Length: 344
Image (cartoon, rainbow, N blue to C red; front, side, top):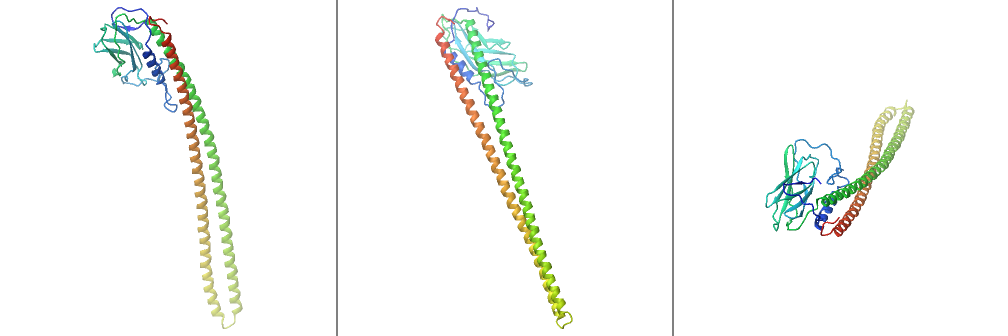
């Protein structure tokens, strides 16, 4: 084993993780689950995930979930990497109240802190660093009290830690697979809903075009009727004037016919304008109705997508709960099988 440690003598006797430490590990693994509609980047505390290119010129954030296990004048301390994609060169673990520090490099996130005083309660903090400097200080670990006779089996600590990392990696893959299927299902729903919306929009557009054609045809018919009436009335007036020709009433009839024709022209203009206004109003009503149809279709489409997203989110949540329960059962089995003398 290549644990980071201080210069004190290495202890090789056996002693398992406590139930508290294992339970804390499991809780941390469960916390790795990300939202199915988030960035999609796994917070790879299990050490297996890949990360995008680190952010330039930035120090790391705080390491997460610092856990401690007491030994004889020593303690094992482990943690999970900082959240995000910033590069980490190493870590510095500090014991409180003694101030003893241990530096860890090469991504090792389990160290043995030696030189502690038995019977004194200690907590530990961890700081990640890179070429740009030190990052944020982690929250304090659980409190531990080193005692005479407590031994830390480094091989078992590493084996249990690796087992937890493997379980976390498997959970990560299952979640990513479920999230991928959920996203594909959501995209299929969006495509189907948008195709249906396009069809309804096309039908609404066709409905408007047909209504426009019918309105225009109706307006043309009304205009033709008005012009026919005007031409017939003008012809009647001309006949009256012709019959009065050669009589002493001719001038009077001609004047009256001219006035009547002017009135008829004005009436024709009014009838044509009224027909045009009614046609435009009819088309406006049809367009408004079509617009309402499209808006209602859009609302239904949005609701369908929202319902699908909610259903898929609930499915992911249920899967997460099942995996968390599996991890809790595994932790219970490990705790029950671990003996007081450090047996596997």
